[in-house]
Length: 171
Image (cartoon, rainbow, N blue to C red; front, side, top):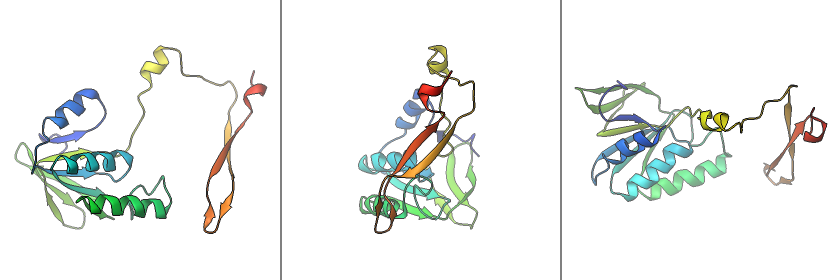
């Protein structure tokens, strides 16, 4: 169903413009993915008057990138603004007759939708940097080691990345 009218990925400026053209008060937006991109879309759209539902397959939003306490903070903020969050919810299909009408989840729940934005699995576009010769390659493999900066009552508060080999040792 990703080919249905009204189902978008957010990768290019053209896609941004196509998505933006569908934003109107009362429109039902389903965002697939509760990471940075999905939550930013949700926050923006709820302020524009759309009915926003976020479907996240992990047990909490931003699961892979922030601590549970930070995740809970962002979830509470979005809920307070009127975003409906459904974590632990995997999308199984998009349905409609030419245009999106419903998002079907693996647990059988269905969410009505006029617009769907899929904000998962980001892969950076590096062709511009490569063309400008801004992408650096290294002759020898590198590894990164995370070390705690300091600890707080509930664990590590920050990490410092140390690069091996250090820049001054590169050839």
